[in-house]
Image (tube, rainbow, N blue to C red):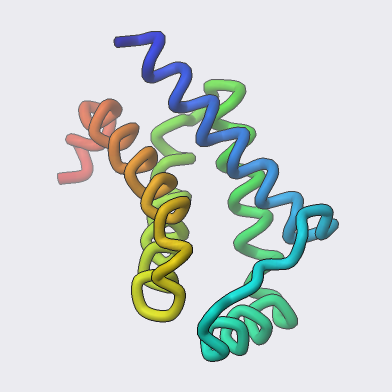
Length: 122
C-alpha cells in the first residue's frame, strides 16, 4: 500500500507541476471548450492574476508532493483548486470532467491516507 501511495503522490505532483508551469509558459495546446461560456470565463481568468496564482500554487504543491516535504500541507493547498476544477467542469464543460475528477479523487484519497495529521485540526 505504501508503494501505491508513493506512486499516486508522485503522479499527482508531476501533473500539478506540468499544468502549473503551463499556466506561465503555455507549452500545451490551448483548451477548446464546447460551451462558449466556459471559454469566456476561462479566458477572463487567464487574462487576470488568478490563473498565474493557481499555477504558482500548483507548482509549489506539486514540488512538495514529489520531494515528500510537507505533504499534508500541499494536499490542503490543492483542495480548493481541485474542488473548483471539478465545479467548473460540472457546470460549464461536462466533457472535461474526467481529468478534473481524477485530480480531485487523487487529492481526496491522499488526504484520507494522511488523515492522522489533520486530526488535531478537529
